[in-house]
Image (tube, rainbow, N blue to C red):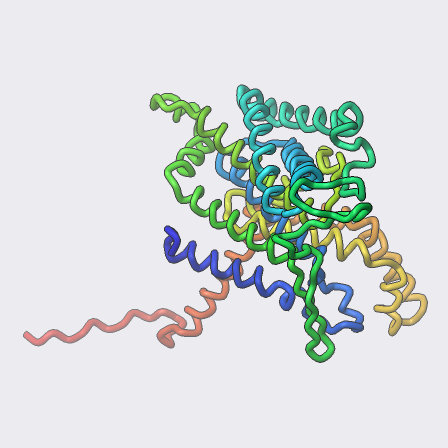
Length: 405
């Protein structure tokens, strides 16, 4: 289907089902229960899951296929965001032109950065991309203040009057899709559960599915095979007479355009942009997402992005008061001691928890969360084979059949 083999089609359908049913899947606990703290089915977080999933998918096309580690990919996220917000401020509040402009701006910037950075490889390439990202951040923060808004950033204001939108005087525009407000939500009550279906989330989810489909086609294409050859041994590839530079530059630009798409969607969901999106920590975050999920795999970056954003938004909200509620059944001294032990790993200390998880994955699951899932799958298959055996656990040899003379 759609040019994919049966395995890839099944994977795409599974991802599509999980994405469309996310409001149900991410709200497993009833509203008002103590475990409702772990529900993630609210619009803002679901949007971040799919948007940063796009960001990680694009980064994986560069890092997972070619092995080139970029420490400056947040620059393309920021450039795409600025392109999108200016399109909305000047031309139209429709998110589609804004997203297209974000992809174009990020792609053009990626051509410039990639053309220069790809003259080097290894750590030198990584340092060059980091330098470009930090220069971009510095320009957005101070030098280009009339364009970027400086420290305060840019957002839609009452003074903005896009060409193709008739706003009343003093009215602040809102991002929309042909008149449909991105913030519109529909709620469904089912017993003690409350499920929220947000327009902005589903628009971002459709873009994520398209981005995921395109990444599958790239992975399975002759172009993807060339990128794998670059990662395997670029010197040996050059001995065959093939020039790897056009392929690596194309991968870099495609990866930057994915980042620009994510930046445009961030603006479509929340119409404000700041230079912090281009800071080096944002670039490091997408590296963690990709490695945590499984670099070079199709679904790994999406899983890694989901885990990091879940921890950032859920684990960081747990405080001592919530812990005391959970462990109120314990004797007072034991309750206080338990809270004391857990306190460093929650709230502002969620980065410590993330660091421990990342260390465990790198040490025991070098292939990321995808490798963990594969190991579990092999274990389950092994148990099925054992339970469905021939009833001879000691594996005695079977007698040879009698052959009549």
